[in-house]
Length: 392
Image 1 (cartoon, rainbow, N blue to C red):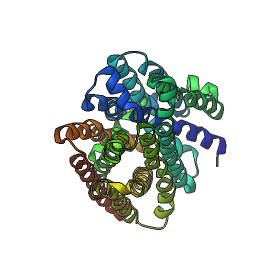
Image 2: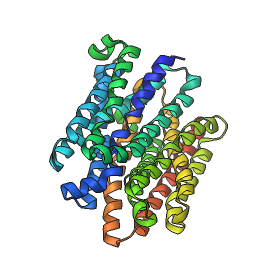
Image 3: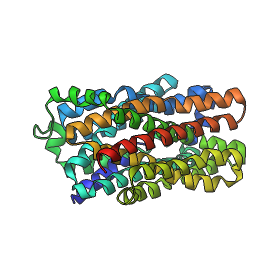
């Protein structure tokens, strides 16, 4: 087990969701200062997710040309630049910085399954995937928990910029773990022939299982970003928590994902994938329905939903790795599933915000989230059944 590389992957993962989630605890302050509607403010969370969809083919091509080592460094540097830009001006500048962050994170989303499959023992792929997914949520939890207090002290602009410290640390550790020469100049031995990029990606379009996984991933990601963006506001408006407490309380949803992310690989080694997807989807569904029917029990729903959303993304990645027979296929499948899934998810924050404004409450938005979880459940179980028939 390459332990130092695992540390580098963990630090990398810390920065792949935090910059997006950092907006949620201060979205009220941003709306007030910049004069934005709820749907427009939701773009600051949904635009990176849209980038995940639209930029995924370009990310796959970049990884094939530059190699995984250099692609990771490009990703981290891009997130850093976008983070610094985002807080410097008005809404247009914030959008530009957000787009840079989104494109850079897209590269990271696609390259991680390639690195995991290539550099870690096959017997450890599941647990490394779980650690990676758990760390995504730890990064989201840190920013969810810390951004509001930082904003009270320094203002929202400095608060969302302060997390650049984690990016600098990740760049330094990755360069040391992967080698600065390979990270900066690339390594021909690890870069795929660019002529293989298009076939690897296009082959996924002909796979029904890939389409089912893409729809399942879309349901998972739509639900996650819809809840992540608006949970602090829901807790503030429905439960009467102040902004700082609402931001801190919503971090429960993020940190409990660690349980699901680490628990699902263990279950996946003992249960059929369809059973794991069924359990995850059922637990996930408890969060929007629980907030709808018994909002006073929000800590319970955050615990259950948090564990489920951490497990949801993990089981999809595990199925992708199991289906793939080569690095090129892993890259193509990862790009296709994430690209299409995030295209659906990109609408989540804005749709949930728009439904809230149209209805004047949070019941209808929570029904929308519940419907999205059902998409994960239905298509995920179907995709898993097809994988089981090929890999019993």
